[in-house]
Image 1 (cartoon, rainbow, N blue to C red):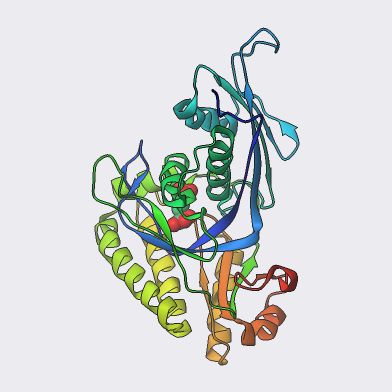
Image 2: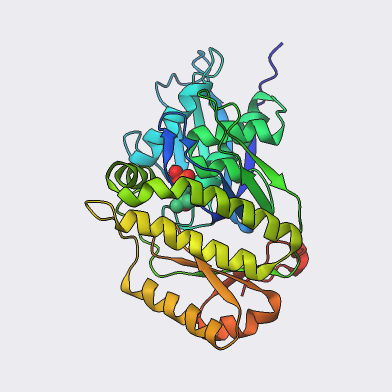
Length: 331
Ligand code: PMV
């Protein structure tokens, strides 16, 4: 008897890497050159519903998936839909040759806020629900990785560690939770520009690894930073965490800037915001930043500094990842 349900649902949060993933050792399987550590942001993420589009006579026969994003039906050739359908190719069965995918993001799509991470994690959770696999989160992480590397970390609330793994098949390259709640830990989102980024992370990684002499130093540094950050989380040593995360992000961006043609995700306002962070630190406000493949900054600070940081960055969206849902402040 079939265990396929009428629909499957999944929700996953976005995550911000504190120690970054940059560079693939296998571009098909999304195997990374180095491991990474992240924090998930509750309240920002993706909700996905999946329904089988059967090709039996009771339903209209279809030769493709039906995909909608934020209430809008997407053309199959549109890049987002095309990539999603390619991923779904891994899961088609005789009973479910095509899928209807209804997905809603509570983050701006492709704005350097990792909507692909929450997107593929939510999709894998919806597949697990639809096919009734009941796989453990680490196995789902492995599947989400095939959609987008950073999605491997979005299966978990709080901190997550993505192990780079060593095998060619990548069965040892998955994320797991680092269960270490840190109640006063805050992440602030400084939105410089939420427009779609001109160079996606896959192309950016390719460009950097192919044409940057500095890149050869990156994987070892990233692994060291990862270990330091894990230790800082376990010790709740915020200074060590913040300094290592900021240095890690700047080192990653240095490899991009030093590639040819150069790859610079920053805008003038990004640099102004970085200088503001450094000025705040000079004044004794302990705040650090991290940045991904986009112009936006993510600030790291503790709740005691929330007022000072919010005063310096107007319109700052503050997330407290470990706050209880009813006290979750998004100011
Ligand atoms: O998961 P991808 O392929 O979008 O790559 C993410 C890359 C960074 O966001 C820059 C770093 C990271 O670890 O999330």
